[in-house]
Picture (cartoon, rainbow, N blue to C red):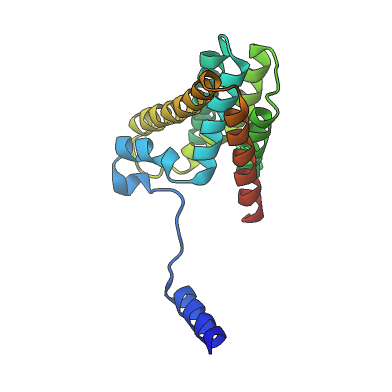
Length: 193
């Protein structure tokens, strides 16, 4: 009896559900507000952006600001490339891979020179920015870009704050754990592709 109820309830829920859309349509939501909300509309964006901040905090020194800044700059370049119609293959798989890799970099607390960290995150940022540009729709490009750059910087700041806060209270364990959870989230994204 219970098994039949579970099966029936599950079937009804599946039939009644509507597809989830991970990204907002900027043409419908206003370009600046859509840009601000866009990075918060998908787990891939949130995890990758926080992962950048976590790893930057673990790198320390000037990497705390330089690594996230490199991400923001390269993301704007990727956005411009999408608007220009420049082809970029494997955008979604690379974005999912970025979540796993950035999480793993934080998990193992890989120490590299700041410029290497900037190059690594910059590579992934091109794909994130390209995806933003591909989803622009009919909204104004500059207000949309300003919004998602600000939101991305906030998410980087959250990752840095977690990393620096954890370092004050007992070392990098919490930051590394957050990196591991980020990597697991990225694997979950791959499983859903």
